Image 1 (cartoon, protein in one colour):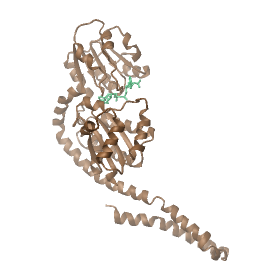
Image 2 (tube, protein in one colour):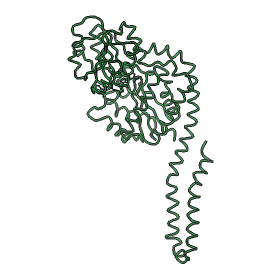
Image 3 (spheres, helix red, strand yellow):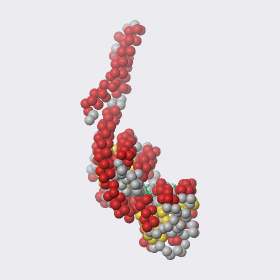
Image 4 (cartoon, helix red, strand yellow):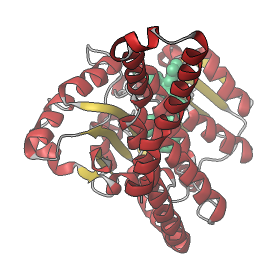
Length: 407
Ligand SMILES: NC(=O)c1ccc[n+]([C@@H]2O[C@H](COP(=O)([O-])OP(=O)(O)OC[C@H]3O[C@@H](n4cnc5c(N)ncnc54)[C@H](OP(=O)(O)O)[C@@H]3O)[C@@H](O)[C@H]2O)c1
């Protein structure tokens, strides 16, 4: 049933970016994330599950026969967020089921629902989350089918509407703010983290001619790759505390759910300099500790503050969003018929085996005596006829079902 598709999500439309950060699951809380997600499937009777954390949403897309009733929601919340008061957490969630869930997934992937409408980064993030969940073994046939349709839909939205034209992204908006805050190309810039986001940051820094960039990352190889984009230096994250060359601007963005730039570390990095620094924190949850922002003279740029710029972008793209939504409606109709066909295939999946079993019983039990009395030629003819019947019969129920049931 298409109604078994469900989404539980927290997004920038219903929550602050800070709150969204509180719903990002840590890689480990004593128990590795993969084990927790696998357990969730078992305990919550979920057949397949896709978990997607991004900078403006946390989404669980899954299949279950269970309804969205209070009992299920409470179990879900207690399982994933035991530290939250159940009612409070549930109050932050948005819920979608069946066709609505598919629509939401298509809109997310097509960037219609993004904070920065038209940014293509979301499709990369979705694919990456899908890959990780697949590696964890928690993706099943239904989510796979929906994901294929999602990627097709998003590609067609980007290709046939102007939603992604004049591309903007969280990163491009953040760089705009960084420059507006007075950071110039010769200033000292520290980059903390060398993931996809900071790779994009460095591409922008290169574009604006920055010449004094140092990239810190847990794994040095990745730091080197990202630093190379802007001809900067690379150092391991573990060396950050000893870094003594000071800085004017800093861009922090890792997938850590804990603050990386603590009060103590920030103070060391200042090296006694008193002028105002510009700190961009693109991580969700934030990677710069609250005390740093509260205690030091800082121009602090975070995703929450980029919302206004993002709204201007939405006005520019509103016509394209309408076009994208029409396309998405067409894709939903297509998907519903595809899904119904898949359900039939599953239902009739063991039909060949069953027909073979009937044939075998007829030959080896029911008509055995009569067959034993036949000469070789007659027996061979009979077997050929049985094989022919078997082949022809296998397709009949599926064909009739498709003709009578499918839309
Ligand atoms: N992609 C976007 O458009 C976008 C935009 C705004 C904000 N964000 C946010 O940015 C953050 C990172 O996203 P991403 O796409 O850049 O991630 P990514 O490509 O997966 O890279 C993750 C980065 O975080 C580092 N890292 C992970 N766990 C860490 C830990 N415990 N301590 C220190 N470093 C750690 C990794 O270091 P190693 O290389 O050593 O593993 C790597 O540099 C997320 O919070 C995301 O929501 C993303």
